[in-house]
Every structure is written in C-alpha cells, then in structure tokens.
Amino acid sequence: MGGKGALLLVLGFSIIFMVAGRNFNSMATATVENFANYYSDAKAHHIAATGINLVTNQIFLNGSLADQTWNYNFDSGTIRATLTTINAFQQIKELVSIGTFSGVTSTIKVILKPSSFSKYAYFSHTESANIWWTTTDTVWGPLHTNGQLRVADRPVFYGKVTLDGSLVKYSNNARPQFLGGFQTGVHIDIPSNGVSNLKTAAQTGGYVFTNQSTVYLEFRGDSLRYRYNTTSAWTYVLASTFAPNGAIFANNANLRIKGRVKGRFTIGSDGSSRGKVYLDDDVFYNQDPRQFPNSTDMLGIVAKDDIIITENAANNNNIMVQASIYSESGSFQAENYQNRPVSGAIHLLGGVIQNARGPVGTFRTVGGASIIESGFSKRYRYDDRFMVASPPFFPGTNSFEIVSWFE
Image (cartoon, rainbow, N blue to C red; front, top):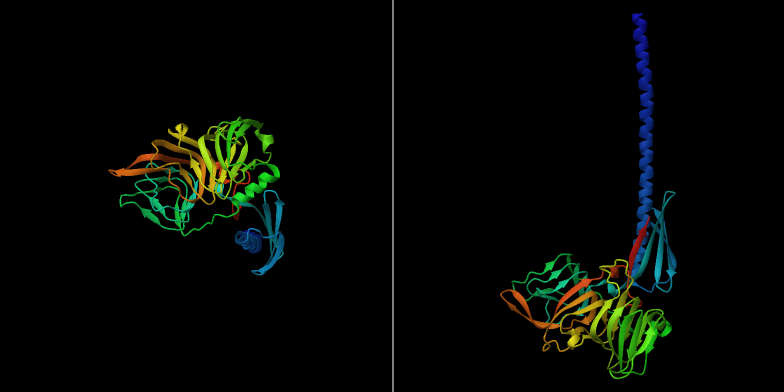
C-alpha cells in the first residue's frame, strides 16, 4: 500500500500542477489580451482628444470658423471631428471628435460659447503712468492689463492677475498680494465693434433713444422711467416690455443712470462727441446675488466713451455699482477726481473693462500707508456668475471658451 499510496500522491500533485499551470497560462493570455484592449482604448481616446485640440485651436484663431467636418489620419488611427452651431442666437457650438484605432472608437464632445469681457473683475488696455493700486485697493476676481501694473504698498488681488507689460512698484516697500496667481506675456485686444453690436441688438429687439443729447434713465425694479432733461416730466414704462431682449441704447447721446435693477439688461451709448455714461447715484440689483444665490438680476453698462461717477451729493459718501462696466474707447473714472472731497469707496460688484485706466481719486503715502486725499478708494468684488454667464449682448472677446467636456 505504501508504494501505491506514493504513486497516487504523485499523480494527485501532477494533476493539481497541470490544472494550475493551465490556469496560469490562461491568466497570462488574458493579461496580454486585456493590455492590448486597454492600449487600443487608450490610443483611440488619445486620438479623439487630439481631434478636439486640433479643431479648437482653429476656432480660437478664427472665431468665425464655419460649421464643418474634418477628417485626419493620425498616429496609425483616424479622426473625424464635426463642428455644429447648436444655438445660433447665442453662438453656442458643439464639437464632436471620434477617434478610431485598430477597430476601437472613442468619442469626445465639447460645448463652446463666446467668451465675454464680463468674466473680468478688471481689464484695461493701457494703464496711466500716474495711477496706482494701493493698500486701500482690493480686487476679487480675474484682472488683466495689456499695459504695466503699477502697485504701491500692499494692494490685494484675490483672482488671477495677467498682464502683457511689467509690474512696476511705487517704491521698494511695495508688497502686492497676488493670491490667485500672476502671469506675464498675455495680450488681449478690446474689439472695435462691441458697442455697435449692442446697438444692433437694441434696434432689433430692445429700445433705442434717438434725437436726444442726454437721456436720464432710472431703474425702479419691475419698471423704469426716463426723461431728456432735469425739468421735463418722467415717462414710466414696464421694463420687460420696454426692452424685451434686455438691450437699451442711447444713440449719439450721453446716458445718466441710477436705480434698482430687476431682470437682465445691458444699457449703452455712443456718439462722436457724446457716448458717455454717467452714474448719478447707486446702481444695484433688486436681489443681491451674495445674499440671494439664485438671483437672475444682471446689468451691463457699455459706453463708446467714458463711464463717469458724477460729482454730486448722492456720490459724496460711497457709491454702489452692481454691474459689469465696459468703456470701449475711454475709461471708468470719477468726475473732478482731483478736487472732489474724499468720497468713501466704490463698492463694485461685477467688473470694469476699459480701454485706458481712468482715475477715481488721489492718494499720498505716509509711513508706508496710503492715505486717500480726494475721490474714492476701490472695493471691487467680482460677481462669480459672470464667469459662466453675462448680461445680454455684452461685448465679447472675439474668441470662444470651452464650458463643458463629455467623454
């Protein structure tokens, strides 16, 4: 029995090792197959992503690129990319890229929308040589200038700061706080058609004031009122029916505004010798989005020339401006900034976009601290909603940005 038992034991182990060896061989084969499948899947995905990159680069270089389909041979595979406008009114586009490799396909879809200047908390094409960001200045949100950024003492920038020029310090004691990042060598042009596009929108579905030199406009929640001088009677209208698409424009006129805004509007003005917007008092939302996150109130203020904080009693102790401000050829500034009294702060919720930076006050430095001598300090708070939304027909950057990516 001992010999037979030993034989059975040897046969048993042989069978076990045969089965185990077969399983090990199957596992090794499956591993190779799985790796091959993974490689094909990854390669197809890489090819599809390349198609997205190739076409989006063309879109960013040419914002008016027509809908079409591209076919490429790439990295032993193929790309089929299709660009489609899915919302002609808002110019929203869909780009679908299908990558194929060794019989495996991968699909990536992205949605693009026009990039709006309202995404900036602050933007300027040029910065004046004698205007400085100081300790009393705080900016929340993205900031960009094509010029030099001049800083004194300790201004605070919470959003990312980009510029095409250089950083200039008032003295060696200047310690600007860039809490959201800092990047140089970035250039972004202000288009020449932002104001005219708003006028066209107002002509086709909003309201245009004509044959007037000045328009006084006051938002009053659901309604608004207007007149053409300080002695004439006001005309009252329901805001939503007055300008159904939200575009209000003063043609060849100056516009003077104030009031409580309910709804989404962009107001603007142009003119060869006019085209200014004056802020005669606070301009604010019916529902402040900081307290009401679901607020849909949104305002754009657009001017061909300057946007000016009026020197008057209402503005001598702070001013509240809840809007994105755009001055295409001029600047955002305070009237008589050098001689008006110290007027508190500009409490801005939104952003300032201007061709040339305008002055809002003067300061002096005492013991390393900035002291306002006339005009305003700045409290520019970014409206986070403007990162993904904008007031109706607000000027765009003539480029697109990706707002969603699906795989």
